[in-house]
Image (cartoon, rainbow, N blue to C red; front, side, top):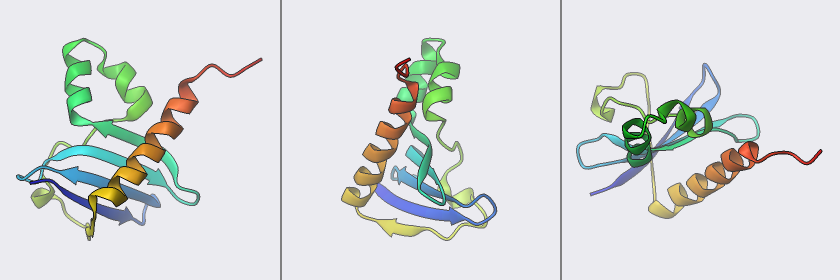
Length: 108
């Protein structure tokens, strides 16, 4: 069963959105910097693993970031708020669009 949560880290003023598998491992992760919800990351574990296999993890990370490696049960100092699948998908798609737009060549 999949779960979705978000947490806010005051130190960096960043919202973290996580899609978690049944064991609490992150399968997708979004990071939004406040103010303005500027996308810092929107990584998918499956894509990270494929990029690593293909020797392109650095390129993937430079665009989308990476997912957390530890299961949520081992995290300290977070106060997760549960989300619906639709809430997560909205944030995910907006963050992916932001990050992909930054990679396009700008017109001269």
